[in-house]
Image 1 (cartoon, rainbow, N blue to C red):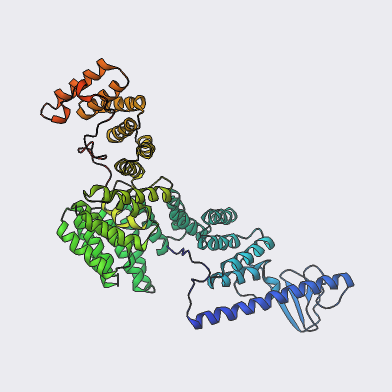
Image 2 (spheres, rainbow, N blue to C red; image 1 turned 180 degrees about the vertical axis):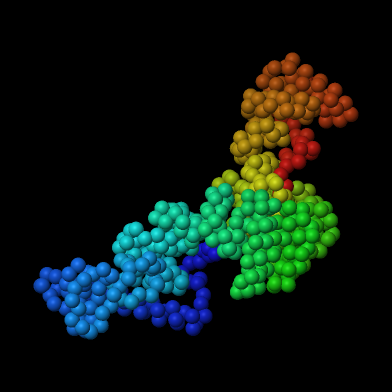
Length: 546
């Protein structure tokens, strides 16, 4: 997206290109030194009534015996020799000048800052651009390039502030609008981003970069019917220009294929994939997209075939392992899914989404390691601050397969699974804390409330457990297990008549279930009863997929 978050050592140039840039940098160093020396000389000449380089009249400057510089409209006798007449027309900083009187304040620092930016020396570039901004606080270009430097350093808030300052000075500044749209997009502020990109497109409607950026943002807004024409327009302009490398067309065709999947346009999908391959799109990503589409259509054998090809073609791409793991999870092939998620975690060890998925797979697997599951889920919660969403690079394929759903909030499922893992490991107090977080996020989810009530019952907090069982039974009045467990808490609270009524109601709901055939005498001094493993309370309620 034209913003690369490199540090200073990651910018790579060919040796001859770097040599040209460094030569230009030395020239700007000399120019800046000369400019400072001249300023010092003029200041000293002003104090001493000096001669050389003095100003005579309003704008007339006598450089030497043979050269006089005048602005248009200035008068006065010129004794002969070379006369330079400066025409002050709008020009961009960095454009060629006839004489240094045309150079704006701060322009030399600005140009040197651009060279340092190109060389990846971002701290030095920022210092030069600060100096340019201080020398000329009214120019729109200076804050814009400061925004570019900040974006490359990962300082998005500062980049947005600089872009906004540039636009305050020039509301029709195309590059600042375009750059601001990209930064907002990278921050996930897609609605704000599309507003800026639309404004940029109105200024330069035939700029393919803006069209591509608009298409990408529209994809993230799940507006694929709008993204398709934007990407098509970008491709049409590239075909007319014939200047861009095939890789650009390949990238755009592949993006078009992704939106075709989401927009259910199979003809466009096939043609876009064909053109993407012809223009050099890597085969691994094409296989991966086909595999995800086959999985969406429940054609699991074909999905695994394509997804495996993608993994073999690009074994260093964690997303391909993650996508194949989702297919294995759909097929209840837990060990294979865990292996793929572990391979992805070797490449992205601090990914909350991967840790969440592997922890959930361990819980679903009958022979899974619940301690490892608890560790994975706790680490995921720590890394994401307890707020996990289905987005980012790993979610790239899935977002096109579930058009219309947006980026799902996986946080409730994360806390629920963590609570189940703690319960299975015999840590009920930790389980209570996790289930409380899940229930706060989804307060009318019966399975969350049921597991929370059970965990409270295990730690002996029957008053709280009773309140949560009441909530479950308001949502599921015929839940026999909840009735039986509520009866147990009522017995522990010495509310025997109500307890007996709940036990009788549970027996009537499931007369053939021997677990429900309990009475007050059978319970004795039991304070809790485990009828199933934590996480198996409500088989009919489908949680968010891992």
